[in-house]
Image 1 (cartoon, rainbow, N blue to C red):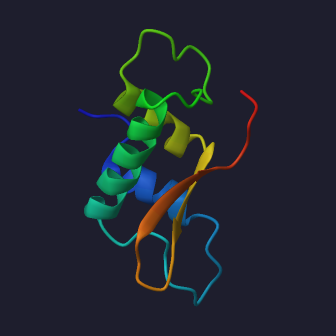
Image 2 (image 1 turned 90 degrees about the vertical axis):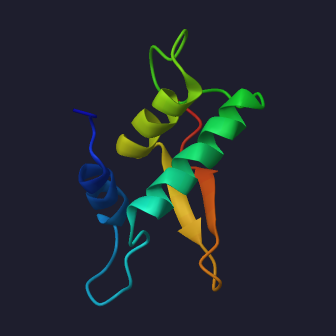
Length: 90
C-alpha cells in the first residue's frame, strides 16, 4: 500500500479550507500534478524541505513535503495548479 494515500493527501491539503469554500484539490489528478511539479522543482535544484531527503527519489520527497504541509498547492481562477514553498526551514 502507498503511504500516504491519495485520500490522506487530499485531506491534508484541504484541511485549511474554510467551511463553504471550494476545496483546493478535488481529485487525485490534482494531487498527481502538484507532486509532479514539486518533484521537477527538486530535480531543478530546489532544496528539499524535509529531513532525510538525501538518496530518496524526488517524487517521494515531494509527497512527503505535501503531506507534512511544507508546500502549498495554489490554484488561480482557471484552476491551474501551482506549488509554492510554505516554509524555507527543515
